[in-house]
Amino acid sequence: MSGVSIEGAAEVLRPPADALPYLRSDRADELVLEGGAVALDGDRVAGFEPDATATLRVDASGCTVLPGFVDCHTHLPFAGWRAEEYELKVTGVPYEEIARRGGGIASSAAAFGRASDADVLAQARRLAGEMLASGTTTLECKTGYGLSVFAERRAARLARELDAAQATTVTGLFAHAVPDGYTADAWMDEVEALATSVDVDALDIYVETVAFANEHLVRLAAMAQATGRPLRAHVEQFAANRSVPVAVGLGARSVDHLACLHPEDLDPLARSETAAVLLPGAEFLGAEHVAPARDLADAGAICVLGSDLNPGTSPVAAMPTVIGLAVRRYGWSVREALLACTLNAAFVLGLSAEAGSLEPGKRADVILLDSPAAHLPYRFARNPVCAVFVAGRPAWVRPDSAWRLDGAV
Ligand SMILES: [Zn+2]
Image 1 (tube, rainbow, N blue to C red):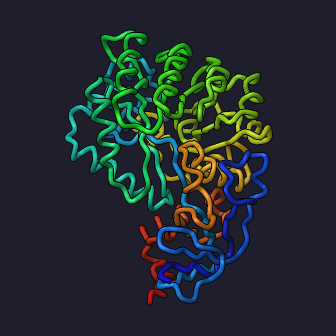
Image 2 (cartoon, rainbow, N blue to C red):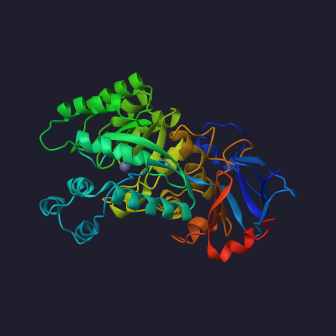
Image 3 (cartoon, rainbow, N blue to C red):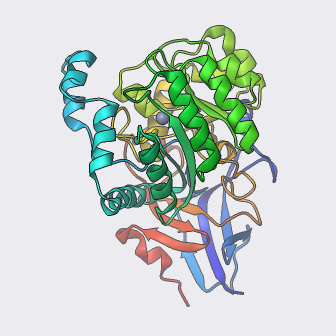
């Protein structure tokens, strides 16, 4: 047998049962974190006994072994950054003034339009590489920085061409902002044409007073149903627009942000199969409200964490940082945070049969931390990831940990 045998780990994270599509967050304490081994056969997880015949034996002493992180909410690909705008924001310059100076989403759309395909792909690959070194082995891309029919098609094509080391999915966030010259209703006609003709895995919308309304969410749901794609929605980021009951009623796969979730909408969301995707990086860097994540977890919601990696509100790529923010600001346990960026995040992307947990037969996306799992949030913003396997192959190894893989035959 050719394979990888990861041996002597201090902790290995496993689900309480195999083949769960997700685990409600009030059951996170059932996740098992015990010492042991993980054997990989080809691109699959084979089992939990050391394999003396493996071609690569990995010394995981003192390490935590986790399924690779799944980042189900990023805005890759985009062009450039908006660091000047961040400084203006934190020093108190009003949003209107920032927009007048050419900031905001329009500046990202303009940069995307100016950048060549090669430049957009190079930046996205660099970021995917950073994410890999931070343990992310599956990531979502979104369109949305096109703001025209032509550029949204281009964004979807470039997302497909990304060719990262990780597994990737592409979400059509065609309804991100209302482009100049359109009303929201008129742009939704273009969204409909895009949704039926562009190759994407899911449809998404930004519902907010400055963008689209609940009636547009209803319209997108019809497009999602007609084209057989899951519906996702950015909701309740800056105001309680009561989009959550609408999205839950429409069978949305996820509602994302929720910093301003209306209290009456919490229990119905928690009882539904619509995942609650929380984005603590955006909340922290934007000084937004904090999502009621402790209550969502206690109520049994399918809680999920994402980076929201984007140039405007969350230039954060590292899941260990996101986990650190979630544990501190949400009052979550380590298991709650780990569940939210592994199995439950895979559910959002429709990949929980393939990724998100260490189970025989699943894709062998495995990461090693150089410390106990509890250190992940505690040593805040430190990256403890020292080796990353994607589909059974070493995809990244920190130089000071290369010795762990010296067992190659
Ligand atoms: Zn987003």
